[in-house]
Length: 248
Image (cartoon, rainbow, N blue to C red; front, side):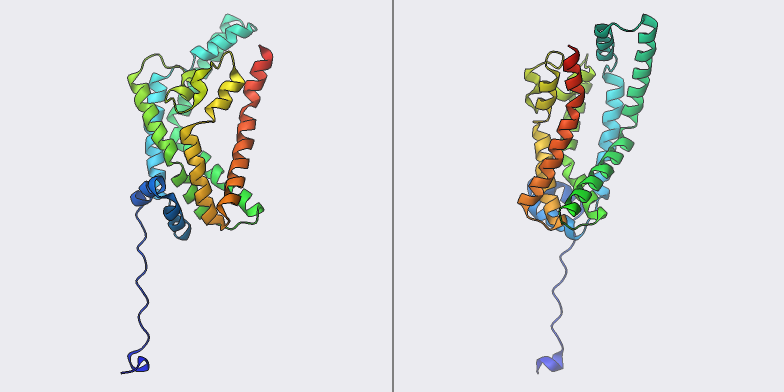
């Protein structure tokens, strides 16, 4: 019997799409293969739900356990340009705003991730890359998994520890060298060192892998784009500490 009589051979079965949980694990242990799959078939529901749940729990713990007022009071007292009544009013507002931000952290987290995905996609498209917003958002939420690990560890520490102030937050996990200096004496150096964070660097590496596949560019070009955006972000973050240093 000839090939003409039997017809064409059936195509090989399509590779099944990994589940969201498999991809969450995959970006942590085999990011290259996992992001190639995400670029082909973008999904974001599973990691987004995880981010929202962890953000909600973290926000509740922050609102109940973290002292947001003491550091603000100390800064106001050092400046000495407010009356006691003005200070109490400002501190009351600080407390209210801090709780709103803490309890609203799931919503704020989603907004931040949407903005990051949009900025990343725009940057890569400007650099001649490809990609859709679905792909960019999928890569963004999966790349955020190291930050979720850090948030879980930090939440456990805060739940077990007493007297945690907002100034302590960046150095609670000891994943960056900022604990070697004090924010009060060296605000710029402290802020700069907080950016040398293991989980932050891990997240950047995942962004590099993911957007290399989404934008269809080399990993070197992806690294150059991601790192450039990160440097710009760090420089903006140093503006406040620089002003604080000048006031000393």
